[in-house]
Length: 127
Image (cartoon, rainbow, N blue to C red; front, side):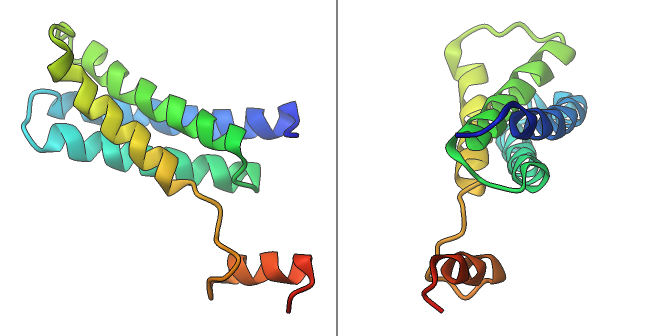
């Protein structure tokens, strides 16, 4: 169970980066490849900030990061004053940001050699 303080820390960190990313991303709304790359990078940054400030990567923290990454892509369209129009215009950047935020905030696997993975194993008493 995640308490409200953890979600507030994750939300504030992700929201600040989502606003900054939307401010940068509105320049690339109608570009072909950068309209997917920029929301994806913003999604990774939102995921990193949310898990870093929450000090954990629980399901609810990952959902917060994903929601703010998707909101950042949609805000970029609003900042650029481009009508949303057909779904093929705004859905791919939104999904790119949300997918990279979701997969970028995965908790470390206990079997990895990373310091975070070793810490998980130590807490479980396996090493």
